[in-house]
Image (cartoon, rainbow, N blue to C red; front, top):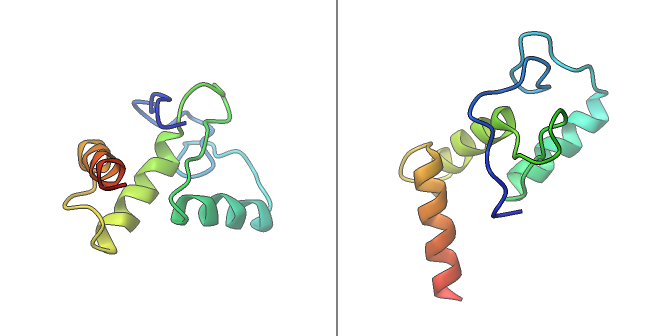
Length: 88
């Protein structure tokens, strides 16, 4: 999934930040968030070919707050992934 492109903007029905969010149960939302906080990715429900922008924004802010990223950007995320891969 690391090679999947990230949506440029959230889709209108993004459960994380859409104008008319897709309804989901609290249990499903917790599953999505646990995946994001566990360093996973959330695939956009409307494309199935891109990483969800709304989910990525939540993940970026969380990783930055945890001190894992210097800034909440895709570029900082990519740098951290590359550093992690080169260390292994």
